[in-house]
Image (cartoon, rainbow, N blue to C red; front, top):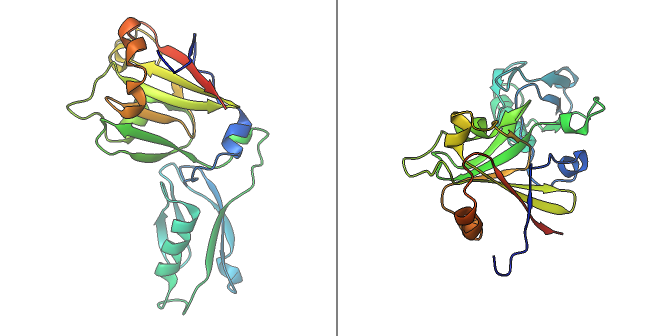
Length: 220
């Protein structure tokens, strides 16, 4: 492929813990996320909570709070608006992720995966627990009628390298190969897009039918 150096690999490597920690992408609240919520000057409303399996939690005076998919700042604004006037004249609310207590840095907060292209709801979706490519597409509402099952690209940065995985959802559904794991900060693109057009020559020569095609596209 002219002007684009690539190296073919057998698998798409997982990210390193440091890739998640130093990421500049927004962090989103998800299921089983630990949060520290404080309302300035109101000690009874300062507490540590964990969201449930659907990303919700209960908070005094306002009841159940739907937190999944929101940033801590957006969540603080939501709590403030529900407390304001009725309970507290001008509440100052802060929401932060709690510091990780696990030895695994990947357990720290629910980060997001971006899903774009021929899906019904493009956007960033929280990742909590194990996420796969098929599940990421499902979170984005599934495929549109124009989606190409054999044209799904995953972009991933690992250390100083960028990797590209090209997958066939039809082959995964048939069990030709395993549904690959998706990690926070991955970008999934379904169907035609400017990003994957630069790989069209490789796709034509090596279609991802019986196995995924993994490329090391560049080093930073």
